[in-house]
View: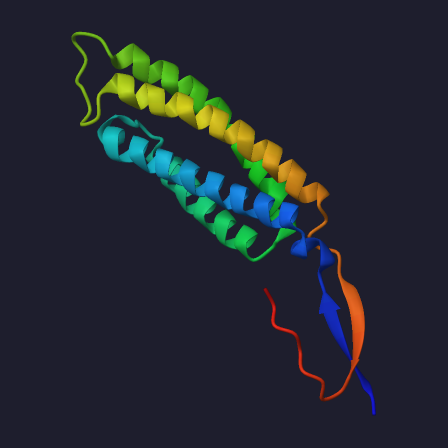
Length: 158
């Protein structure tokens, strides 16, 4: 009777790996939500940044999908995107605060609130970078081959 090879990922079963993955997904979704708030509240005032803004929201949602599927390779890319977004959010916050004066047209969400939301994006990105680095170090990709006799039931994945 031949043995069947089963691949296991022992590092994915650790509670620290599961927690890190959940936090990275949560931070990606929070980032996408904050970006959507800025887009909804200041759409007419984004001046040429509408395309990249929407692209960032969609890319972060795609990243969240890959992290849910335990794709470790996307974590450094997420960290790179987070660095860029943190820089743009910090600068954008200042620009929104500059618009919060008499004589400027106000977007549907007050400019001061949009500036605050942009500045909230910055610490979320810093946390995202830190947890991506932690997740990358946890070696989610490690595979171990286990041999089991043919016909034996495969244990349920959890």
